Length: 410
Image 1 (cartoon, one colour):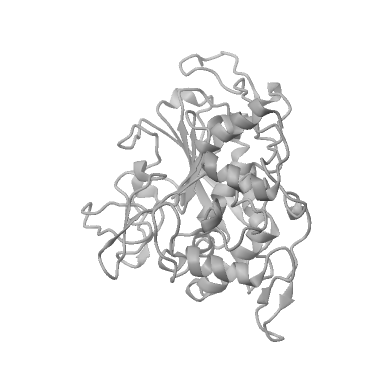
Image 2: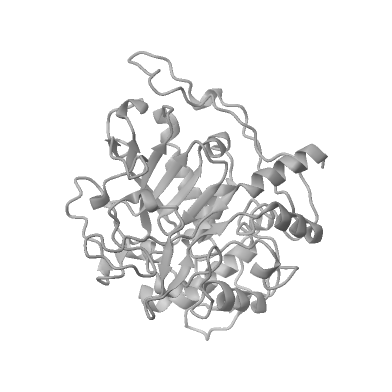
């Protein structure tokens, strides 16, 4: 790899971020802080790192949030995994126009004029890694009895010991909650498994168009397929496992929010309701708070969305123009506008697949102290070791299902 390219990648990675933040609306509308998502008064905290309170002790356990690897940890990481590839992605912005330039009859550049998408090539990979998702998932060694839901353990790629370590030290009830590192999936009923079961195989999206540019309808209409494709790549590892009931997951786009409706070149609601000038405290467009459907851990029930004049939304697809990285958790994904548009036609978009993984409850794996072993296999959750979902990711997701299944009642 050329030295200047390596330096460019290291610089980018040092500025990338992914978050696992829970929401903090203490004192608002009678809500008390608790682990997991609670009733929001503003969606502006989505994707932010906020204080997490242990509900059993009332003590702060730091802030939720995870970061993409620093330059130092990436150097450490590449030393023991090897490195390959020089191209990350190129900048291309002819899919949009400056806000205010769109007028009746004005020509808007369409997606057809985009260059061929540039593949996202991982900074580091090993012989066991990047393209493992091309193989069909297997059940490995089935440990459940005949006639019972299929429960199994892996026999290749990732070990049962590694899976146990991740559960015990990163995302299970025994994991030490720590800023930017760990959380407890057992105390939060807003992860995606819960949402899909509650909605009987579907999830509703609000698009937050956080940019000064305009969006063409033919491009906006592709968001559903992009998201749905990535969810179903994860779902391949759940299909048929432990009585997971859904063969296909469905994504519904129910709202598009912008600072001005004129930023959209369509006025009908065929892609969902259009919202303008509904801004959070940071000035970011959002769908109405009364339309946000979530599990309220304070009242132990799903939120009341009867005041919503349109369809409720479960998560947000937040496209932001001034970031090169992404965030994700139970509230959805905040991703780089440029990266998403430049790779819109790619089969696998690294940031989207990775951030969806956080919404399923999986953590990042950067630095030796975040992994069970130096040879922990490549995964999309160890971003840039793989741009696709690997067997490592799939088995970790299965372990989450194994543990939370009793509350799903499937």
